[in-house]
Image (cartoon, rainbow, N blue to C red; front, side, top):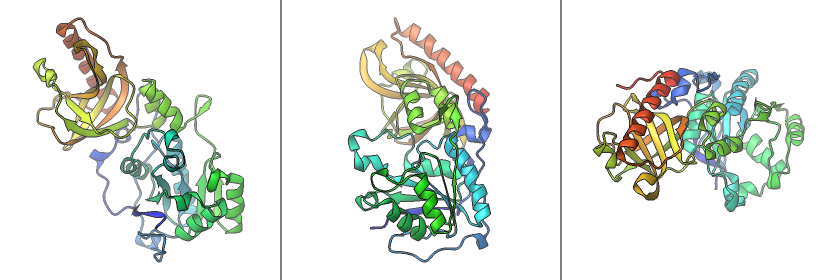
Amino acid sequence: MSLVAARVCGKGKAVDRQSLPVCLLRGKIPGGVSRTCTGPRILEDSQVRPKTMSPFLQSPAAVGAAIAIGNFDGVHRGHAAMLQRLKALAEQAGGPAVAVTFEPHPVTLLRPEKAPPLLTGIDERIRLLKACGADQVAVLQVSSELLQMSADEFFTKVIVQEFSAAAILEGPNFRFGKDRLGDVALLQELATRNSLLCEIMSPVNDGDQMISSSRIRRLIGDRSLQQAVEMLGHPYRIQGTVVSGAKRGRTIGFPTANLSQVTNLIPADGVYAGVCSIEGRCFPTAVSIGPNPTFAEDEKKIECHLSGYQGDLYGRELAVDLLTELRPLKTFSGVDELIAAITADTAESCRVAEVHAGIKAS
């Protein structure tokens, strides 16, 4: 079995700006924090030197790359800073910048009961990594074979043989090999022994704490979405299939798209402001997550009202970029009070979309 997944995602296609998170396009997020990511740079043909296929590779990768290995879940501001530094290291090494990630998360195989809910699926992670400057994204297929490798074996078989890396960049908490026995000191020793450039990057902090995927997960679970978005450096995207609901919203003037099969972490119950892009047009979106206590419904739903959109979305895949929380769920005394609250939520979601993403309701 190959250690590297079939896709080694490079630069063959132009970036679809409509597919990028709105805050990557605008360059700002709630709270006024600037995003340092840029779009992916195009490599000259002379910079890409396909390696000979090995028994472990199903897709060729450029040799002489500067690589960074990690889960990169959420692709937050710490990851973005690493990718910016990786680009500089790649230029120094004379090769492309390659982000190497895992699928599935290693904990899923090692301790499935402790596997964290993901912030980003693999396709979303690849998209964000490339938007932050990775020339290629390589996906390591997590298997028992991979997880049983010692730190020395992982370095030799993956970093040296699979990627023919010229340089490697990691954070101070990087661990590798069976039982996570390899640390940055061993990484530097092995890199020196194999004539690789090796750099250990300082963490990026928010306040007095390091930005991390686990910290962002906790914030999203606590309904502190704006703070999570500030640490991510881009909106938090949820994506699912639009399914039929109670159709109550259309009877009170606020039709909703009900999302199902959302596979990443769903925020805590509440009402949120976001943006949804459909066929090249962006719509301010108010999102209600949770049950409907006003109508004594206990089933948890994700209901999205797209301001200005008219059309049928049933059966379609829909991605919503969440920007901030608006309010907790409430039980209203009746339909009139509910309508007043939804009207206010819709107006506020339009204001948030215009201020933070430059998008106005049509």
